[in-house]
Length: 323
Image (cartoon, rainbow, N blue to C red; front, side, top):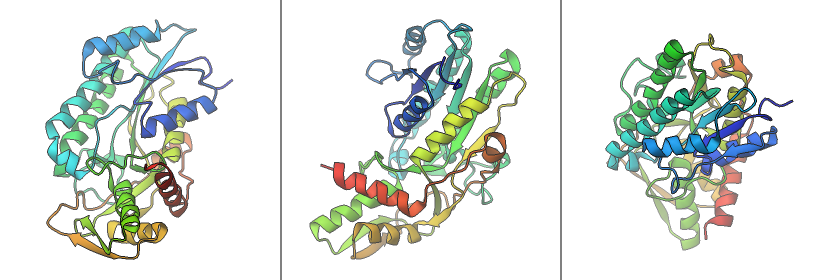
């Protein structure tokens, strides 16, 4: 029998980009009771909404265990982080800390918390190893968001120590894939660049403008791969109270600079014009690439999607759905 078959699983953020992939993965592995709270019904920054959500899930028992996969987050690219530091800090901290606290009160079986690569220090040695998480301050533009999510690791660890609370804490690298957010005001780098290139081809534009110098590097994981990793971690980790809750990277261990990424996206979208760099805009964190050995060793996860194929699938989805 699948681990998930007799579980009620609450997936916060389950209607979103990553969440919908996690929900599909859970269903494929036999989970038949998934609760997906929507923000219009449950504002998880408010304690009464969190309590109502747990009440809706029912009282957890030996025959009715409840597992939480906490994905809900207020997120965005460099511009959105720079414009909303207070909101990104408060909303992400309050959603997570209240979900953990009320989960402890009602006696859930396990809490799987998904953090962010933005929690790492600005100048972390590459590839990022989990032991470096506290060795410096995050990159300034996304530090409020990263610190809020990193605080949830401390909460989980302290709750395990005092209350024998079971859980897991995962750090996925930048996601991409079909269904991503292509809104220029809040999108991350891959969907933003895909939109720029596709729109430029349609409009017969001779150039596109890109933030920064292109020197920064990033690692990207296909969203369906990340969902597989999260669900597998939920199955394998936190099944006894003595297992330490440690940060675990979820990535593809493949680094590419933005200056290398843009010509690849331009090629796949058919854009042949000029790329103009606006060096007055920030690059963000200088480099990002994760050491994923801990995930491989603890629960056998490796990313399998070829980057070029994943980009093509993302572009095809955007071209089909952009209207």
